[in-house]
Length: 317
Image (cartoon, rainbow, N blue to C red):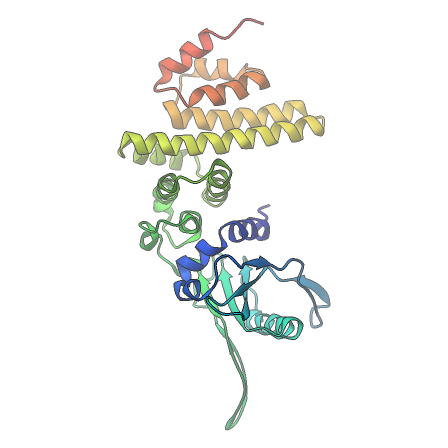
């Protein structure tokens, strides 16, 4: 199962200012960009549900050019649930009680369905008398069009396009555009891997979609193709390494090799196209170490001939 909370928290903590710049530039202009402090483990007891809840993300920052501070609270909601507006208000009230600072509340709705416009306020009123009219900012990804973010030079845009509104037919194109934008940002390898892994998690393509992805990739500029393949190779190599390490630790060497083989097969198809059955059989017979070496070598391949040459020159065991 996908750990939505972890993925989104990791993304927002790493690229918090970029997130604010993308969706709330007016707030980005008002804060001191050197003063951000992440407040960890803000845990509240939810009396109505009888459980403790941890607020997703709370950041304390200084107003630009002033000595006063304020909080930014971001809550990601991966599944649609009734009563969310009430919960946002309770978080607001509790944060206000604890910190006695102005609070800018943001809800990030990342679920796929429903598509209805979600509420952005909690209101309590009587005839002729409004007791409470609490509002929070809303980003509802399934109501945003990924095309509107293609030209945004922002790593958060390259990640979150994978969760925006798209038709089933557009999935390969959207994945390509996510990676295309990511390649243009020239991030360090660790941050590049984080976002490409995020995109691959939410846009995992089937065999037919992979074919269309390769067709789309083939018509863009060679320099962009190379940059995108470097990203994909790096992420898949990391995934293989983690899978092998876990397999060795758990004593399931054969299972770890099967996972690595599945990833290598996908990467080979992306890099040189579908290979003949006899070549696939030779890949299947490789050891775990040889599979790891093949991942590194694939980056330099231009055709299936390069793959065959590599296999022919493997040292005999």
